[in-house]
Image (cartoon, rainbow, N blue to C red; front, side):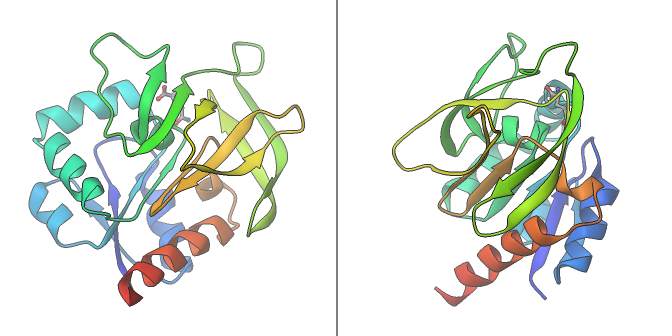
Length: 195
Ligand code: GLN
């Protein structure tokens, strides 16, 4: 079973650990640099990206995380995790940092107040229709040429992308009991091993 960490500074860590376990990974919580060094891939959970950014700095994890991503470590971010994987963010807090890695611009809290939370069926390329749970979710405002769009809402809004070994969704598959997106990620981890 591939060793997949879940960044456990803040957010829905337990739900991702359970989903990864169901998807065939050996899932562990990652809070320290030594724990990061022991995993071959990482999930960045949903939660609050400004808090996650502060804690990553406070725990001395920002640079180790950036270095692993630059080396090609597979990573998957849901919601706040998508924000963390974005090269650029809009409506972020002034001192907010991201890990980056995906050549995209993501808008925080993009769906606005009335629509802070909603569910929609989302057709994800390579996975099929999934129940998308959106909670004060970001959307992808623009992507670079190397980024594959995996899902759009019916109005065209981009809500799932992949670039190389990096995967990101605006929504939270870890909250639905449907593990197909996590299985896709575990497959990406296995494929990288076979390289
Ligand atoms: N709005 C949150 C942020 O900016 C993300 C919400 C979520 O992860 N459910 O980080």
